[in-house]
Length: 229
Image (cartoon, rainbow, N blue to C red):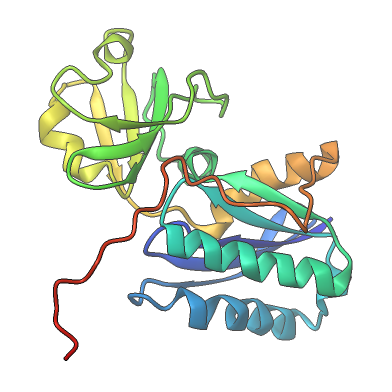
């Protein structure tokens, strides 16, 4: 199994290649607003490094969201182009799933942890979140939630909880519970490895023509107050 992984849902742009279950190369950049200019070159650089063509890969996996509207559009558009051109399947991986498996794969889950709660930064005290068990199973729906001092008290009453993601840090003081631990980080393409491989083995592919990212909330445009003339 050889998969191309693309993760662009937050401020970190990343891509990786999986061969026989292992990450064999990856690229990452947190340069602001550079997803559109970096995603495709990252993939090309990795393929050149491995002496491969896109058609030598079995599928492309891309982050489906929730997350940044622009970042998701860039990632999905790039993935679709690769799949169309090479005639290979498209796999989508939820951003929250990526964070959970990133925590598991990097040994970030504390001993005795009852739940992993990934958090993607939305705005102010709002995050995109859901509740997962330490073995990666989602046990509550993905929602947009405004965090306050009572958030996740029922989960914390059961034992240690890991909060992880680019929205975790801003919630530390508000949640303020002794059994809560926080890891501030962005999802990486390498974290998609396990869910992407599982989807491939189970044949869970997306329709390349009609697949759209999972935004969770509608994108709202605003009118600039600056006068152009």
